[in-house]
Amino acid sequence: MGLFAAIRRVGRIAEPAPPRPESSAAPTLVRGSLQLRHVDAGSCNGCEIELGGCFSPVYDAERYGARLVASPRHADGLLVTGVVTRNMAQALRDTVEATPQPRVVIAVGDCARNCGEFAGGYGVLGPVSDVVAVDAEVPGCQPTPTEIIHVLRQVTGR
Amino acid sequence: MSAAGAAGMVLQVAATAAGAPLVVGGMRQVRARLEGRAGAGWAQPWRDLRKQLGKQRIDPAGTTVVFAAAPFLLAGTSLLIAAIVPAVTTASPLDPVGDLFAVVGLLLVGTVALTLAGIDTGTAFGGMGASREVTIAALVEPTVLVAGFALSVPVHSSNLGEIVAATVGDPGRVASPAAMLAFAALAVVVVAETGRLPVDNPATHLELTMVHEAMILEYTGPRLALIEWAAAVRLTVLLALLANLFVPWGVADAGSGTVGLLVGLLAVAGKVLVFAVVLAGVEVFLAKLRLFRVPELLAGSFLLGLLAVTTSYFLAAPG
Image 1 (cartoon, each protein chain N blue to C red):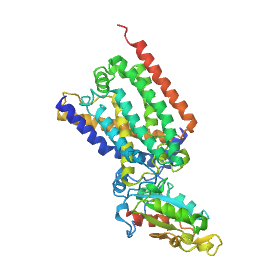
Image 2 (tube, rainbow over the protein chains, first blue to last red; image 1 turned 30 degrees about the vertical axis):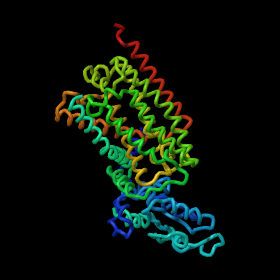
Image 3 (cartoon, chains in turn red, yellow; image 1 turned 60 degrees about the vertical axis):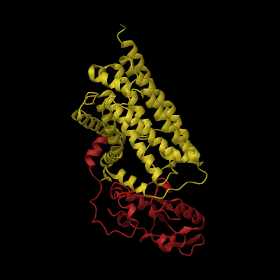
């Protein structure tokens, strides 16, 4: 079987885990288990590619207890990427509202923190913190999976 | 009702309740390792459940008592099945009153409760998931019954404990064509019933392809924890039942002492572990079937079940 041979040949792809960062002030309930819902509020999709990388076999964010889920109702954390555009502002507020307490909102990328490249655009309402309360930020345009996972680990404490 | 049987029942319910999330975690871990990932660890489902239990409960606007009651119905029926099936012991006090038909009925009660809850939310995905789940359940339940008949014909009883006890007494029965066909049919059905690949992908985030997940999209906090725990219990119990119907050795009976019960517990835990690892390993090699191909797979498994019954009638000694 070709796939079986490939599994044996490749072995473990996940890179060794970097040292554990200090825990943030996030709610202690989500220690060790953080289910995440991703919200694209108006991103260029650069951050999405890096988020995809976080959950790939190489970076494997799942080993720190983080997991992507399909519904904000199941989530403890929201990963918001991109500037908040006028069309997505209400959708973002609704998504945060649908997420049960205690919840963590993580703004990923420079656009989500301070509008970055798109500041002043006609469709741009503002950074994420103008629309909903933000608990953690990941700087960078775009942030690397290592930087995103660093912040995720501060929340999960693993 | 024997004291050993009652103790065995308590033991198997407690072991299933505590161990089921670990089975799911172990299967995820096997899958992660085969994909080259490090994995979250086999105890991760328990961490998730503990956290969900402490979270806020949200009642979505417009939902009724159907939505609120479904997790309890699902969990209750799952625990009841765990008490009935011959996992640790064949002499469970509930075994005489709950045979194959009762187990299939209880499975269906849990499924229907969840589908009604999916419809009750009024969302597009909830209704879609419910319709898919009912489509699958309508094909799965007859197959369980028919494959079960094939095993019960030689024993002259539809009682699961007696079927398992008869197989322990006559090991040659496992190698009969009827038993092998029934095993193939039941294996496909367990995969479909518990929402594993290739029928449903338990790790999907894509609403359009969901079956089980689509129905529970609106659940939060403690209710979500209850549903996920019950789903894990169903998977574990069905694996234990499948294992004991075809590899029954080690199972305790009415005359077993403490040692016999412990051996029964270890035996069933080992068997479930092997089945779970094999199931998770096979899943890595499978892609999800297109929804309209799923009835073909299940019809095939029903045919196997039908053949098993026919064979068991023809090959049964006529007197």
